Image (cartoon, rainbow, N blue to C red):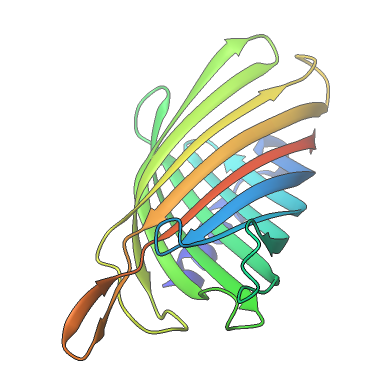
Length: 214
């Protein structure tokens, strides 16, 4: 599903005149909170992030990549640090003045694999973007998350992804300061000896960065 979605979005954007396209490249740093099995396994981490955004007419494509180094937030010696790489791609189509339908794909990889769950997920939701003032914008998004292929097994019939993003810069300038907050919860469950076990995954990420428009 990922490749057809990305291929179609790139084809739509590439077919437009270059001058009519809006391209933004950003980089920043983030703080994150990661939990599994409610608050039983809790980690905190930081790391760099990068973003590429393409827009033309009613269409938009956003690709985010992040790398985090997580450490246990408690003194539990059975828990070990791990690294987490995440990449996501979201294709949107504006249906009203400020509202767009958005579909995406997410891949998360943990190293070592026993440190946290690695998985893939698809998302479907809505995004609302509002101009606050000249050079200032705010965007809200919410999406349903369907997770599959967990490295530790199990399934997740339901998940939710929420996001808030703010950007500010000179109205006619290329540089913008960006900040966003993302919350995701996936209600994963497994079975042991025929008994269902709830092992949800919850992530919160706060980013601060700088973007350049072309």
